[in-house]
Amino acid sequence: MAAPRRYPVELRDRAVRMYRTSEPKPQIKPLAVELGVHPEALRTWIRQAEADAGEHDDRLTTAEPEELSAPRKENTQLKRANEVLRTASALFAAQLDPTRPR
View (cartoon, rainbow, N blue to C red):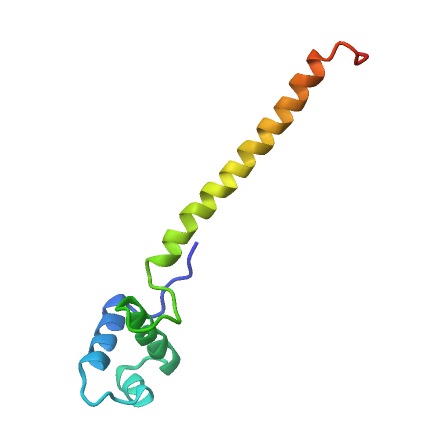
């Protein structure tokens, strides 16, 4: 279960919008103090918004971790299914082997 968010989503969206629409760009620390948020939280939100907008390639977009987790889950399920099939196959082969003592 995910940790509860410390700041409301509305505050996060407003803070990022304020930063991105300002010209010239304000310094992050004074803006964070003005909004009552931690400067590193604001910096992280801004970097994530820039990645989502395609402005930076050094960070995954918000949707990419979800896209990556689906094939990983499927891979895990397929590995489990293969292990079950391998075990069942070995047991079935052992039952059919007439040379094997019982």
